[in-house]
Image 1: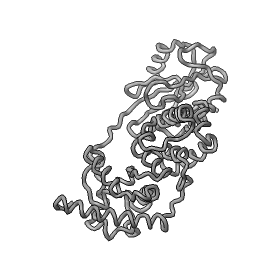
Image 2 (image 1 turned 60 degrees about the vertical axis):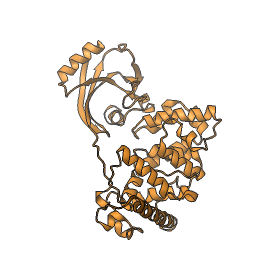
Image 3 (image 1 turned 30 degrees about the horizontal axis):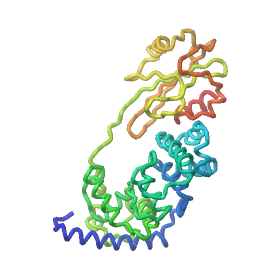
Image 4 (image 1 turned 135 degrees about the horizontal axis):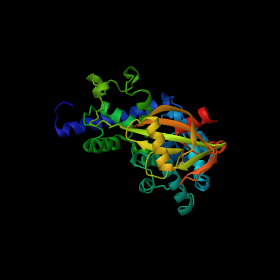
Amino acid sequence: MKEESAEKIVSIQEKIAYDFAKKLLLWNRYDNNREMPWKGEKDPYKIWLSEVILQQTRVEQGLKYYQNFIETFPDIHTLAASPETKVFKLWEGLGYYSRCRNLIQSAKYISKELNGVFPRRYDEILSLKGIGNYTAAAIASFAYNLPYAVLDGNVFRVLSRIFDIEIPIDSAKGKKTFSALAQNTLHEKRAGEYNQGIMDFGAVICKPVPICDECFFNNRCRAYLMGKQQLLPIKEKKNKIRKRWLNYFIVMCGDEVLVQQRTDKDIWQGLHQFVLIETKKDAAKKNLDDLFKKQFGIENFFLQKNWKEKQQLSHQTICFHFIVMKVTRKEKVQNFAWTKLSDTQKLAFPKTLQQAIRLHLL
């Protein structure tokens, strides 16, 4: 942004904010054709479900999960009373399973402590487990039209371009600046409509590669007028990717397999898995066999097959090594249970393990 006095910058921003909000509402009402089943929804429970499911998830992927959740758990009481294994199974494949754990915990709290009545105040919504500023603002504005601006990746991108702001969005200063700007730009009397509009606008027009020719505000967008639209927003940090080697021993006896539920505060907490040995690097199979014998005390087994796969998570690269082995008798292994292979379909596994069951074991 060019050097300008603080008073002039504020004045310019206020004028741009007013004009943008006015035109955005018109675009949202007459030209926004983005269809989603939760748009226009006033039930806070359904809004909450959609927002939790869509965190870190593309709309195309989250849509079927949302529909399945609404059909299976039509209200908070039903969700709260359902076995956690059933909820996790329905969530299977979405990733970021802490979202599901928080969903269950908050549903139980609302069902038992609040008699199933979803909170109506922003601060009460924000206090629920797993709900941050963005989700609280979305629920408060969509369900109750409360004047709280949403601030997600789409909104960061739109505002940084409209106002030509080069402050990194992932810095403390950036978060504070954009939070205030989002709130100042919000049309408070039509908060729900405005919030839905700006998110849709960022998703279909002001995308990472924007369609500026179709933008109703291209004659006022400061970044576009200076040819900077694809340079914004700015981030200062890059995620460090951790690499992990997970060696899964699929130990089978007849039609049963050793399974346990992950309890550590790590990825996939609450999901199920096979016998696991994690190594610091890619290990030779002979070394893995020796580790398996030493750690689990099972000597008599024979190998059926083994293969390797990779899965990229947001901050981790997971290198899988699957080793299918047969044993002649069911040894007792601490914290593991012998489970019929057909019953594994009822349990929630990480995506790659579920694929291994479906493609290689059933």
